[in-house]
Image (cartoon, rainbow, N blue to C red; front, side):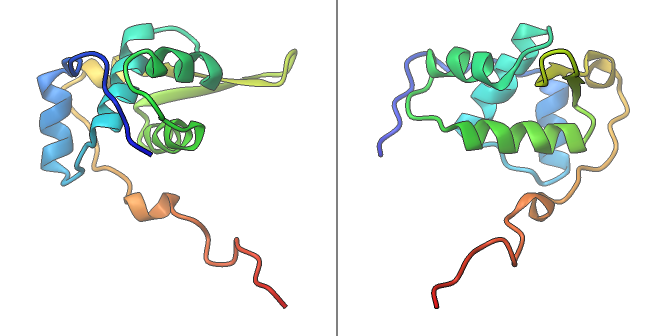
Amino acid sequence: MTTYYYQPLPDLPESLLAYFNQQGYTLSLKKKYIIAQILALNTDTDIDLLLYKISAYCSSISRSSVYLVLQWMVANDLVIKTVYNDDLKVYYKANTEKLTSMYLPPLAEAADFGPHPRSFVTGV
């Protein structure tokens, strides 16, 4: 499936880009759109609203792509994950305190978020 980008790439903070480069984490265009939308919303957001907002800028982005980037950002304390018991929904919000601080810890390995080796079903 071909991906079409409808808008120019949003600007990410230079400190954040430098941090990703320093840690050796490459950002694809889709990841940049996801991160930019999380930063722009700056409020508790569920994955459906985030996917809707991102699809305005980038076609054919999958829910799993958004989810994996969110999980990676939560593991690195760049996003705060909140589960509200009254409606059993999960909300995400940029950790602006962490993102605006000068100290950011080393990133978690991307391999930590890959499929578990025993997570597939084999035929008999």
